Amino acid sequence: MPETWPLSVQQRSLLARGGAPFNSVATYAAPAPVPDDVLRGALRRLADRHPMLRASVGDSGTTVHDRVEPDVVTARASAAQAPDLLRAEWATGFARDRAPLWRARQYVIEDDTALLALAYDHLVFDALSRSIVLKYLARDDAPAPAATYGEFALWQEREAPEGLAFWRALHDGVPVRRAVPLPFTSPGGDPRPSTLVHRLDAEATSRVAAAARERGVSAVLLLLAGLFAALAEVSGETDLTVRVPVHGRPARFLRVVGWFANDTLCRVARCHPGDALATLPALAEVWPGLQRHQAVPIEVVERSAGVPVPPGAERPRLVTFNATGDVGTVVTRSSPDRPAPSAGAAPAVVAALGTSLRPVTVPRDVAESGLQLSASANAFVVLQCSFDAARFAPGDVTALLAEWARCLTRC
Image 1 (cartoon, rainbow, N blue to C red):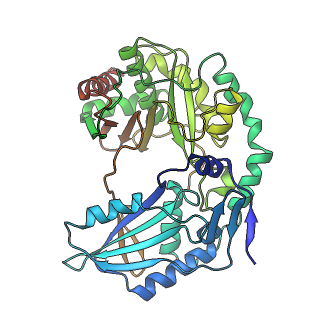
Image 2 (cartoon, rainbow, N blue to C red; image 1 turned 30 degrees about the vertical axis):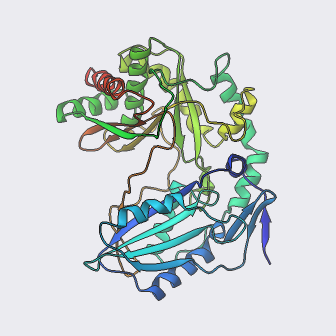
């Protein structure tokens, strides 16, 4: 018999938004097509182990069905057609009252290689769920997780509000949402997605890693301190808030497929313009609480501050920070930015479905009106900004990236 679970705060927020599809798509390249019976069988077993892959969602709750038949299509496509077909998976929505809210599309290219796209509605799936699914496809006999997404929704109602005291204290007396500190133009035409990249050389990368080690923090925290310092330099403001996406999962839900992803609003009230190291202590002071209370939904934080975003309204422009990589990772157990446990990133190539799957990235249009800044810290520190060039002048964004780089090279 179908089972009904309460909606999480994230699910309720997405249902209230309505409008365009909100999908997650994981795409993999394979040296040869996966036989249809192998693919369908593996996906059936995957759904058997993860209830959200058997779910439909409506205003009254999440309904988990006993069994679903995977939506699988294999078709031939030219190499020229493939990018558009894969991008279409992001834009093609689901009938949310009918399970499953995910599908598999395999495109066989002229040279008999294949591209496999697994598309999911965010009501049942988030980015960290991708690595969970890939691990289950690689190990067909893996047991089902002990916890469920329904238990997470109940946890939110019962326990997450305890973290509100931290967020109220952090944002006390200031607007929860801060606009991007760059000139902004309301677009008169279609969006013009753009990306700019700035790479630090080997010497500067080594200095960033060394500075992080000397202070017992991770490179991620130092990169974020550099961003705050750069924003303070270009804006003239020293009290700034940056959006930091997090996985939002309490530890016992790290192996559960579902939509846990959350935003945190990291406020640093004492930024030092142009000086990452001077800004770092104020950031390190708030970071442990941000990590500890990252599962408190941003919608709850907004309501508690008295500034809810009306359903269907465009969210204010934000600076968003993402970071990946492992240069100068946490070197002491007492580091103030020790991250919450993670399910781990997917490997570059994984053996699954009787073949090898290599994750590939399909470029997407910019969906938000803010600045999406990211930093990767591996062999080199790479700073990147994705933005809508119809709203922001590329020269202004270039100057911001250059200042961010200067803040880091001064470490």
